[in-house]
Image (cartoon, rainbow, N blue to C red; front, side, top):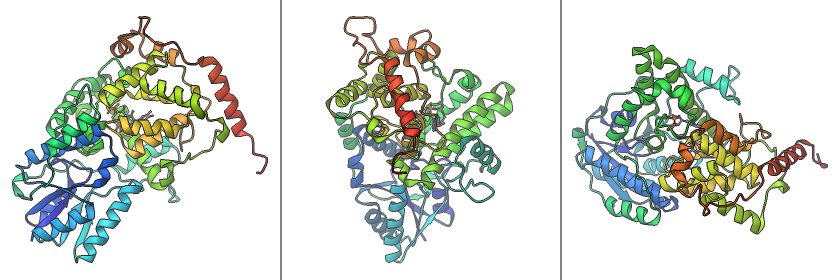
Length: 448
Ligand SMILES: Cc1cc2nc3c(=O)[nH]c(=O)nc-3n(C[C@H](O)[C@H](O)[C@H](O)COP(=O)(O)OP(=O)(O)OC[C@H]3O[C@@H](n4cnc5c(N)ncnc54)[C@H](O)[C@@H]3O)c2cc1C
């Protein structure tokens, strides 16, 4: 009996439990629904997805079907076509993905078929790590301890693509990649194949990982893994990352600290996914109300400030370099993400949701839980967030993390020329305003 693998955020052949289950008892076919909902995605993410699927199909000797339509329609039609009574998929946890998998499950059940889940995009699935009283962790450090104690399986062995039954496609992936590029060009396209990312992971663990604990905050140095893009599209599983880092640490003690810090960064990804799973409204709503509603800037001046931030022309070099890196590459170093986000919220007083929306359109590694909860972390509104009164000073951050100036010079060719913009605000004055807002926010409101 043929089974069907519904490809979701797991476009890979390696370490893929859902695909292995689909192939466990015989042949399997594979389908990816190119949903109309993808029109909401930025052009650059759609272009990347088209290339990732193209390369997966190449790796699977052309057998994978990519078909236009809602996931329910595409999956049911493909299941009928190959006579699959069982469909396997990776379980997802964000609010929209949960709704999607419920709809597909119902449509399959109405057609006399079954959706079964295996695996998740996490080493430990959201909702699994709980306190002894059964409630979720609110704070990262105890979550990290419990997450490590829970542990995770070794990566599964790669699937055999020769055992996939061919399905036709009705999507021209080349054309979709070209349209996405045209709508939203990237100056520095990243690699997009599973094998290129695994090679990059190998290079990272055999080199920069040893220095990761010291250098991961320095944006001029190629010291981080860059795995957020393949993680966002499921081309690499986080277990594969953790196993590679552990493997390096086991063979050479000098990697030990780097591997431990690296695992704790991966754990932040798992923590944010867990928080969103328990608080689906965190996509839009602040989890803690620390800033009074009237503190946020609105109107034309706020729009102009937001536009300057988005264009990388605030006159603050580290902020501008980050925003120009984002525009050109679809990514930005983590330290710089924190600085630009803090600047938007605490120097320009623009609500975090507006910044998060811009990141959604610009980031290639965009992920609901990671983006929204990192914004909430910077805003001080998240579960275990930076305190609101911690206001990043963009000049001090530059002196500390880009002391050589190599990062800002790379992205700001106009830096020391008359073309470089004047500062749009006075950081010291805006910091005082942010702190005064915070103090007001702490006072109980007259109604309470
Ligand atoms: C305002 C803001 C928005 C962000 N939006 C996203 C997003 O949409 N998607 C996304 O994947 N990451 C997001 N991040 C987190 C982080 O910046 C990126 O994951 C990181 O820069 C990716 O680079 P890397 O893969 O080289 O990281 P590495 O340093 O090599 O870390 C390894 C992995 O750990 C995880 N990780 C590292 N830092 C964080 C973090 N702060 N939070 C959660 N996971 C982390 C990532 O999966 C990363 O790939 C955001 C951070 C901020 C401050």
